[in-house]
Length: 188
Image 1 (cartoon, rainbow, N blue to C red):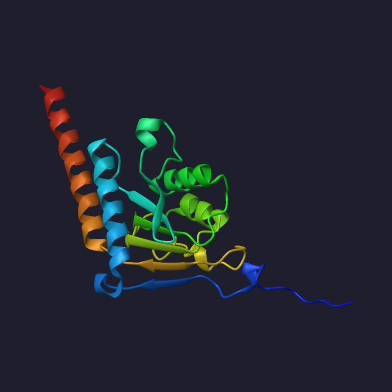
Image 2 (cartoon, rainbow, N blue to C red; image 1 turned 30 degrees about the horizontal axis):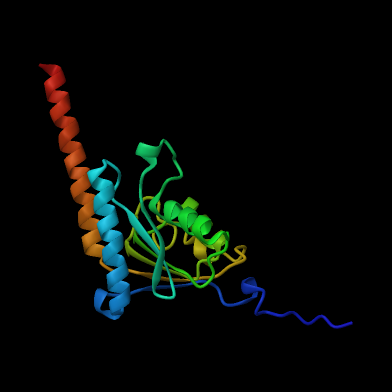
């Protein structure tokens, strides 16, 4: 009896996930275009009072879904930009698998979002800024390198990292100033 294993169907037997951090000019023009859309979505989220993170899912150079953070407005703790885009893509394609897709996101994914990325079988993730507190690709646990995941992916970080970081910093600076101003008004 043969014990042949077809590795083309068993992604977990392939190489572990790869993470490459590179400068903006090392990405191609399409990557720039899709990340610019993600940045626009992040700005849209900020205007709605949400933490400015945007995500775009692409397949064959076509956008299949997009989203921005909206946990506050939707009263849904799972409504991160990546989750919104993944849900929309799965619904529109009527498939929970997104093999061959690339996810562009302005901020390094958290544990929940990386789990959804792995389970939906997205092939490539391109992110902007690192997330020192809860990012799990380069900042904290480096979960994508764990051998127990049954899917490996290519992760490329650093695309428009400064723009992504500036959006987040401006948002939180404004939020802090707003809270100080409310505090002063309440003390009068």
